[in-house]
Length: 145
Length: 94
Image (cartoon, rainbow over all chains, first blue to last red; front, side, top):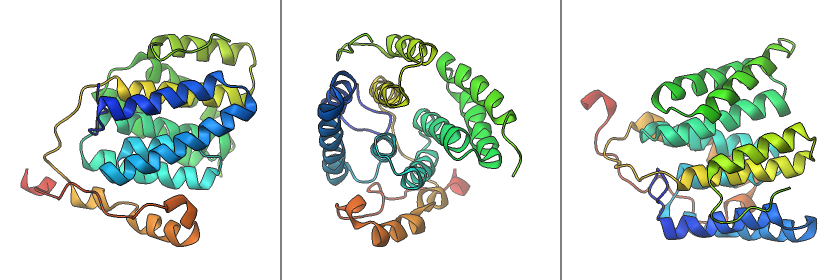
């Protein structure tokens, strides 16, 4: 099936294949597949333009945390603008996780968790509901800034 | 770890992810599984019709991304362009 923001099933299938290869490969090969995936995402962007699925997937596979945050924030804005609740949920979850587990920023963590909660009203998803609970517990353990 | 196939559904990846966390697999492996999980979730939905755009929301972060283009050109090798679907209606006109 196509992504919620309109990337065709055939085009997304290649992203899926590379994501599977990354998981299954050993460390060296995995890095090569990661590079291939990032290159392929650039090609998709040339074809489709700046879409939430592309920006957010790129963010999921890069190591620079600040760049990841910026890509995800941009992707969330686009998803919200286009009423793409499903992508908005996935991206808000990535931002909540990033804020809480990597930056240990309680304020940002609460902000993105609240977005996750709001998106869960629109999109029923037990996995993300459980993730909300887990991250909500985790953010309580962080010292306030 | 269970080797993933292209047919692995999101639910099975979620179970593997949970087991990976419980068994203390490396953060790198967990990160890869999380990435795959979201790729599968994104591909497993029907397309939505996009006919309404909130222009302010669509432009959110654009300035940041332009700055990024200057700071890290390698991250923006494509021709950076605004969202391709032209705005048709704003929220206020809904």
